[in-house]
Image (cartoon, rainbow, N blue to C red; front, side):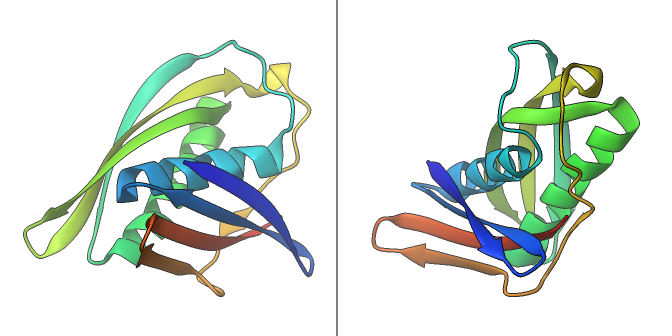
Length: 136
């Protein structure tokens, strides 16, 4: 699983790939963390989260939005993300965890929000590909 940050007008985009949807979600989340902070210390405790949504795209949006919410309420930067995505009935769910690095240990740029602008999530011959624009 990999990610790359892409310039996008006044915002920043994350392009991520993975062998599975879960790996791709985690790589996208790591990319979002990379958009906020380049040098991440090894401090921080892991925490779990679960998100459900009607479609894969809305699940990716809601998952990243939940990580921003967790950042704000826990005062941590979620890094080293792990995720498993499964279809659940007529919707989708992600079971995930992240290591929360205390914000007071970082010099970080704020990502304000995830956007649906230009969002792509598709299966390829090599796995999955995601592209998400973040409002900074």
